[in-house]
Length: 249
Image (tube, rainbow, N blue to C red; front, side, top):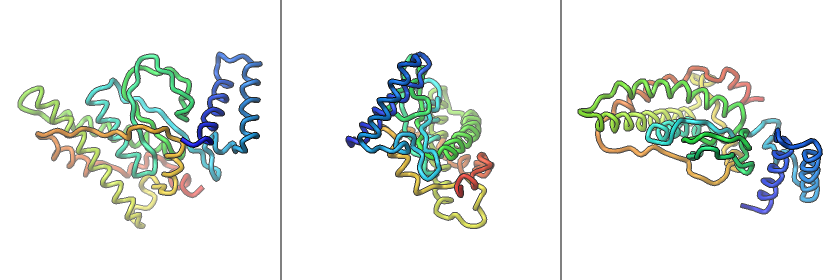
């Protein structure tokens, strides 16, 4: 982490304290004054603090997948499979009860106290992050419904096969999105979330270091069924109606 990045984190933390509901008016003014003094002294632009570049806002979002466990792992992996092809930086973390999201994570939810479980951290252009979440919410319903139809020879085998289904479903979806990313022909133009290659570096800049997350496929059945379901999943549902306008704004 560079010295300037450390300073930016400190300034974000000061602004977060100033906006906190328990901070008094006088304290808030003092926090803001200190933040502004640091920005002026070290010639740091507000765009470097807010993540707004060329009129576009880059944000960090926190998404809860449920209790920590195999299902949460698979769902966070699916989120990553959808996020990466769209230039959204994706990371995963597990949090304990009462954890307070630090300002240094540069998340919209910084300062909030969260519940225990598995989370995705998403960083990218605000409109695209919204679209990725919307697409995930639709595809996760499809994936979980498909996995519930898979049956093994006993309870343990069924659980393993369903986990394998979800892993392969996510792999298939990511492969299709990556292929569309490369093609971008007239037939598909405008039907899918926009792929913003140039945004990836900026998205990674505002994200802390951490794990990108993945499932952990095991031996046994379920893979073929998951791959087939991911291969036919509807990726063109216009989950973000203003996607093209967001891209060209």
